[in-house]
Amino acid sequence: MNIAWFLIITLLISGFQSYIFTKFGLLRLKYSRVFSKEAVFAGEEIEMVDELVNNKLLPIPWLRLESNIDRHLRFAGKHNQMTDFQWEELHRTLFSLLPYQKITRRHKVCCTKRGYYELKTVSLTLGDVLGITESFKQFDAKAVVTVYPELTAMEDIPLPSHSWLGNIMVRRWIIDDPFVIAGAREYSYGDPLNSVNWKATARTDKLQVSKRDYTADHHLMIYINFDETEDIWMPIQNKALFEKGISYAASIAQYSISKGISTGFGCNAYLIEPFGQSTDPNVKLPVRIEPASGKQQLTYLFDTMAKLSMDRSMSFNRFLMEDIEQRNNTDILIITSTLTENVTEKIRLLETQGNKIEFLMLIDDSINIDDREGEVKNEQIS
Image (cartoon, rainbow, N blue to C red; front, top):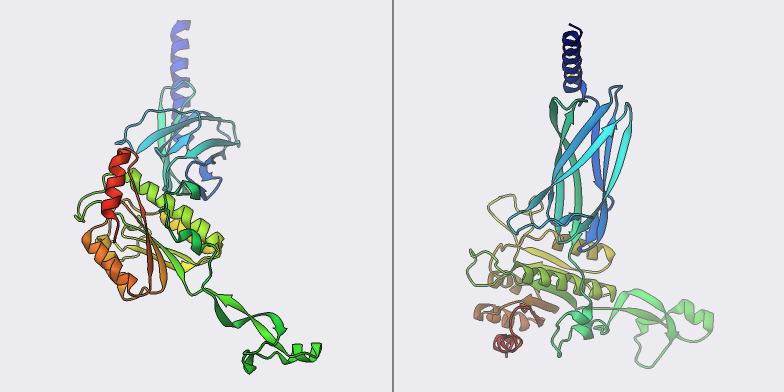
């Protein structure tokens, strides 16, 4: 009889505690997560911070947190073998909370690839003390990180030996800027009278003229040609090759802007959603950023390159056609894996408008060295 009562009481207690945790376990439970940095370069490590708060008297025996994380965000200590067809992996974390307790956990995350990563929701599964029942709830927990392209050392970028790119880093197209005065100097024969600085002349008792600063009339545009073939509907096959091209573009942009050169960027790919410029979801617009200088411009270029889709909005031939009427006196570096006759024709038209054009050929590392040299020779423009 005593055993029977013991079993009945045990079942009642088990059922009661199961009901309590199922009914109230997930109430007044708050979860948030954030990355330690909003933007990093590919290959860098950041922290993902989980914060869980139990704002009630009822303790939580165990709580399992599950979230799908992009496979290019690798958690430290995990070495999962994933195929190219797996885009996400399941991240699990276990918690146990006392009444009114807050737990903060930090996870080391390696950002292995360029991109824009947005974590949206997490699933929380709560169990009772005896593990009889489980309750489930999904929380909104947005966390965003932008991964810039990996930077390559300039000496490792295969620029042609005759490239003018190195020259523009130290060369300036010198033109007097009438709006910027850099001081005064003594008058020399041939100086115009309207440049006489009368205040400096009165101060020194010698005829002085205003010394003008200089400005540059040329700019650098970096283009990436995402065409593998002339068929616009064919998907890009060698994505790693074009990722290398984006890395080259980011590295050159950083170097040129650090030297004071106004730098822009363009390509016939498009931005991932929701960053596309078109109001029509069926229309994909190419990317074109006009040249500018300064840290803000460099950050803008990095951010744009991070959000590029590995797909084309139009052919590169059409992309250049749009430039013919508006582009002049610009240095243009085209990063490409192929050159077609139509593209070559548009390049010649751009050159007649005072643009100077250079090529950086993307070469697949798996191709034999002798084959590479032959392909590059065939693709050079006379």
